[in-house]
Image (cartoon, rainbow, N blue to C red; front, side):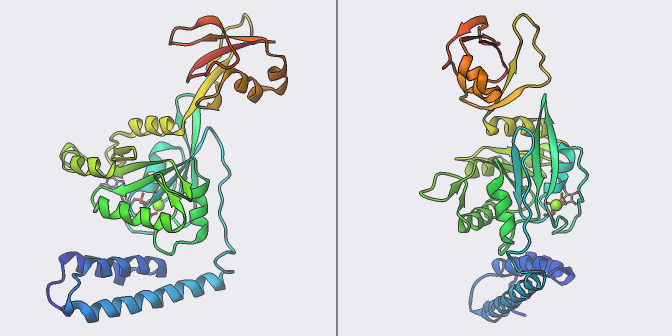
Length: 322
Ligand SMILES: Nc1nc2c(ncn2[C@@H]2O[C@H](COP(=O)(O)OP(=O)(O)OP(=O)(O)O)[C@@H](O)[C@H]2O)c(=O)[nH]1
Ligand SMILES: [Mg+2]
């Protein structure tokens, strides 16, 4: 065994030895390779690890083929509610714990990686609407194609990082892996640009929050970032609000002429929707026959007539006159 291996190497090696699943083993082998200093003294160890990595990849491929081929299994989640948000994160960062705290779903949580094997769904109640959240198996190199399919289908990706780990490196790993599948989090010449929110989990107390502050600034230049703790219930309501904001949706209440408004069942529309678009969304005939509308909101409207191209905002109350 070459000298000068960092203590982290031995911690990962122990996890590698305890791992049963080949996908789990692959993650640890890749972490082991990344953790060793690259110099002459470690060349043999690097070669050994690379050989183990390729053998493990072969074993995973074989396993997939015997289960019906890598393209054979597909897990898609039909959208429900006002929007679909999909979790993306390395093993053990707390994805399933978040789904449990945000929804009534009870998904398995474990202090070992690869607890989640298949997508799981929960509904987040945000004020008077429901937002669908999809818990996913962990992100890793060579993850099955359907996992990327789940990511592509989401209206927003919630990129979750473990605040106790190296968040810059983990975010980099995720971004690179997504980019290899043409999924980009920020402006790019081609491929899907996914709206995303970065969640740094396990920021359990003030001192951790102070420690992480500098890093948050660094990684969050282009994307919204929020530090939370599922374990200590920190910033969970703020996260819900951020998810709602990032979905770019508005809730509009329609009222019958001369009747009071009911606020429990809003119509959910895309931000930027106009009066006429809303009329069409609600009923094709409304659009055809619309003469004008009246609007109420907290920004100065109290039943005034508005034009068809008036842009609606969240919580507008609208009365269609046909
Ligand atoms: N300290 C601390 N631990 C947490 C927090 N959130 C989750 N954990 C713990 O982290 C471990 C992993 O949690 P999971 O929710 O299973 O993580 P996951 O990302 O779903 O894991 P995989 O399904 O394997 O990808 C569990 O032991 C949780 O109790 C947190 O905010 N603080
Ligand atoms: Mg999980």
